[in-house]
Length: 400
Image (cartoon, rainbow, N blue to C red; front, side, top):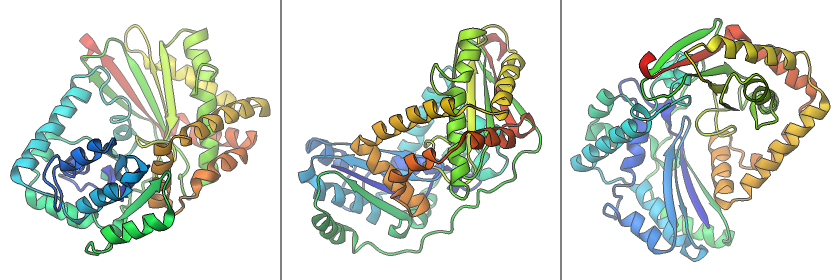
């Protein structure tokens, strides 16, 4: 049995001067709640044979528990208890600021290719603060956080009107509803905050950023293109997903064949559509991103030239047979992923939180099936233009 609570607050919700606060607050939500001391939530979950975690993304923060079905009431009580009130103390706040700063040092600053490309590429592609600031957090901003800031953040965002609860697994809907009413029904109602306006114009010129990385053993380059809106232009977004698949998904993809296997320009490549949450768990501005790691001295232009040629070939048209192969593979992977209980629970929560449409989990395969070869070529022509992209150029080691 899987229980998830998705709050409509993420990296994009952070105000100026509070970078990293959404992630910091995720940590604080594990430090005690209305009636439970620090560590008791964890003990009750693991003591009943379960696991728990949480994460912060561009458009949400989530918390989830995987437990035996007979522990449903425990899981719902725990999530309701921390929604009712978070236990904020100066000691907890300072401790978690230090934990987050250490996490940044370990995962980003002292790690080869730390934050590449998920953290730094949006800073290159986007220009507005909600989209382009350091999502992990600036140390000065984290150190400046106060208990008053944390209390205000909780009151503003951690309200039932700003949350979605999802349950997946072997539970009776009527029993679950009664338990939900019992534990969540008395939580104070507060209005949901207005949605974040993350809109911004599509780039009108290529943007290049050099990122020095003294820990990296070889150069790398990442490219990001703005793409159709994932909600308002959903069919075109799905066409872009399959365009990305043809270009970069697996060893049969065009860029793997071109950059790694045939011309040996790169040691490996990767890419996808979406931001850090995933392909479909996003709203507002999104991107198609590609990355390549290559030997020698920094020289991204030879990689970019090969990418431009392959994109141009796709823009000239793709065969229906090629599209069908990549579509079938993508849909098979998608269906395989939602076979997992936790993934089903998280997707329906995200789709309800962002679109008020949990049923989208069942509609994605048919949406992808509607994409035609001409749609893929049209997306390449309209969106994957050199003058509308951002390039992140990693200079390693002694070059940093």
